[in-house]
Length: 136
Image (cartoon, rainbow, N blue to C red; front, side, top):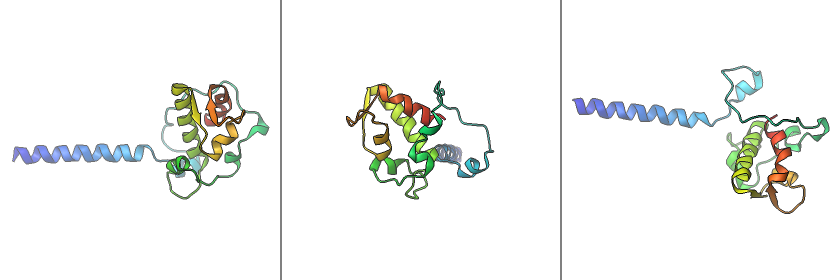
């Protein structure tokens, strides 16, 4: 009897943990539309200078199609389009990779717009604009 209770409790704890981890990475579109909701999730430090008004990225004006494999990975609602929140998460991950490894090979249309010297690699010099767009 005690063994059954222990196994049941273990299965319950694992199930609750799995559900919490699963829902933790999803975008809450209802909260984004209304601008209300629970406490804001912790974010990385903001960039010191906001982007210029005329430098709005193309993905903020219109949701781009998720065509590259890496873009499809960040299309959490699987509608074939990358919403602003999904692109920002993508860019934040690119920032982390470039910070750790020193560069990232351009493999999507979104990153191609940030590759200023057109060498096919996002480097630490090109991160300034990405940081401005990802954290604003």
